[in-house]
Image 1 (tube, rainbow, N blue to C red):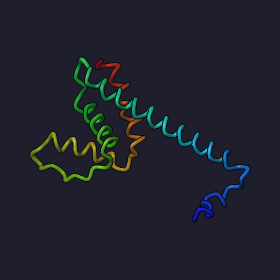
Image 2: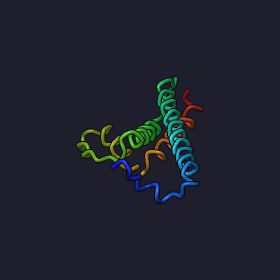
Image 3: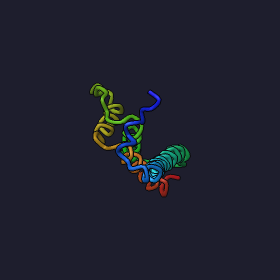
Image 4: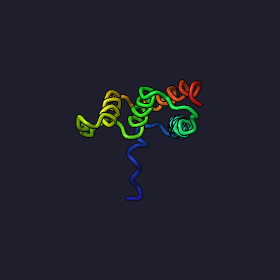
Length: 122
């Protein structure tokens, strides 16, 4: 068993192994740091909304809610609320309309919406 070499080393010539490993690591770190930066921005935007001194309109609140839920939970798979739960139905419809939007895109849209609302309500 000791004499066996890992299978992956056959695919990369010996002269390129260190270079390949370094490139792979750099690409992974860059991707991770970009994602980490986006998460930090998203969390900061969520905290900023709580400091607004004026109330956004219901439609603006629904936009924030929908992007926040899509970014943090993903696609809406919950059952629709009953017909007498008007607030719940509005929130469910807003979130459900974002079905298929990626986490990354939902975070970007949420951050952009917060920036837009900040000018008016902060």
